[in-house]
Amino acid sequence: MNHKDNIIALATASGAGAIAVIRISGKDVITLGDNLFKSVSGKKLINQKTHTIHLGHIIKDNKELDEVLVSVFKNPNSYTGENVIEISCHGSPFIQQEIIQLFLRNGCRVANPGEFTLRAFLNGKLDLSQAEAVADLIASDNEASHQIAMQQMRGGFSNEIKSLRDELLNFASLIELELDFAEEDVEFANRDQFRDLIERITKVLKHLIDSFAIGNVIKNGIPVAIVGEPNVGKSTLLNALLNEEKAIVSDIAGTTRDAIEDELNIGGVGFRFIDTAGIRETEDVVESIGIKKTFEKITQSQVVIYLFDASLVTSENIDAINVEIRSIQNKFPDKPLVVVANKIDKADNSVIESGFKYDNLLLLSAKENIGVDDLKNKLLTFVNTGALRNNETIITNSRHYDSLLKALEEIQKVQHGMDANLSGDLLAIDIRQALYHFGEITGEITSDDLLGNIFANFCIGK
Image (cartoon, rainbow, N blue to C red; front, side, top):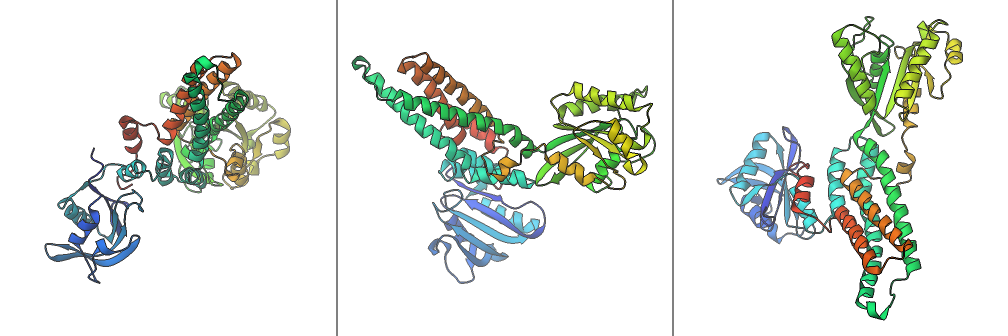
């Protein structure tokens, strides 16, 4: 791929709108803009200062195609580090395509997915982890994922990795220097300071790796399975949480045959609720398939809500309900379980509270919207929002997570090597590997395949 030619793409969403923005980047784009744009002031774009906006018309075949605003960004002070112009035109799909086709016929080509950001990376405007954060920022759909993407795009994660890498690189160079004076038995790298550095790097890497557990669920939404016997109000609860009639509600047991999913933002964190088929013995083939899917969804979830009908609890069936709850706990011991007594407006709550002894017991009425907010607040307690509030670095990218794991493995080899008093040449091998994995994160070390995989997931205009 030629990264020196002129590229063009629609930067706003496709379709009709009030305005659209067309982005063009490359060495010759300002001159090209002068050929196709006529300013109302008669001034040439090439003679204007960077970061200025100019009113005028796009000219096609000596006719005015549209009245537009053209923003000028001259290298290196642009997003891509190249000359960039952005055309704000009227949002007609016809006008958008006419302008794009006009520039394509005059020295541009259509940008590939993420190519503007790829050029920003290649021109040193962003490192690789910051470039990936751009895609995460565009995809963020709640406050938490937005906050994490912004923190990474500002370079918080990159700076932390670069600082560790620079210190490790300094010691690595000293150890490599020792190898040149092996016969003189000279020690340039202070082993006590080096040991302290390795311990500090190990601590930071473990903290970052541990943060991936929370970062991954925040980025992708936290799946919550709503389970229980048929007709206890699971679909009603889903509708109450979402504040809309998403699931069919009926007095007929077994109405829900398949899992129904939807997302809700609670306290800035995305939760993905899954209304499942009721768990019971049945000879209905279709319902049996739905119940099988219920257990699959529990496996995929991060939190489980077990719902039972409080109005039907008696001394005869209370033990059976407790057995069912303990069965879910035993099958999925690592998943937080919230036990919810539904339809409390029709029940004797004293019987419920005395008969069910669970830390996460909640009483609510989904139909009357009683206690639904308590359930939302309870779900938030399973998310470590403290790390977000303290603006800590949180890892959300699986590629970064993999590189951190590999870097930690190499650092631990160095630590074991020092404990065993291995020679500097053997330590240097593992140090170089750790530096390699650090470089993979920020982009000091890349390959065409890696860049292709990363930027292929971007939208065209970014």
